[in-house]
Length: 133
Image (tube, rainbow, N blue to C red):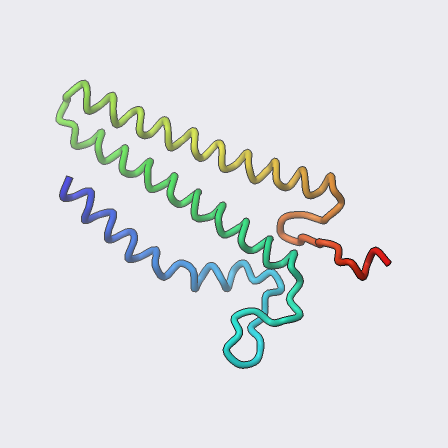
């Protein structure tokens, strides 16, 4: 258990730098504004929503992969105990089901956004009140 906690804390420490790289990859028209603002005032709300949804999906995907690794580690360290092997197998199966749910949620979100005519998840175009006039 101590090894699992040390591995998990090491992964958490290394993933703490992920948002910096993630922010550069998923720019999505979010530009830093003047002064201390993190987001420019003229940034479209669609870009912000798209970034947040994409960020949540990536974090959930990374968490599911972490659970697969933890389940594999439990399986390796089970020492042949049938109950520990069964628990590790259930852990891995649950993580794989989580990956499938994450992938399906991404597909469903894209289908709904496209069906509503708002673009796609990477290029979300939420209409404003001025566009309806």
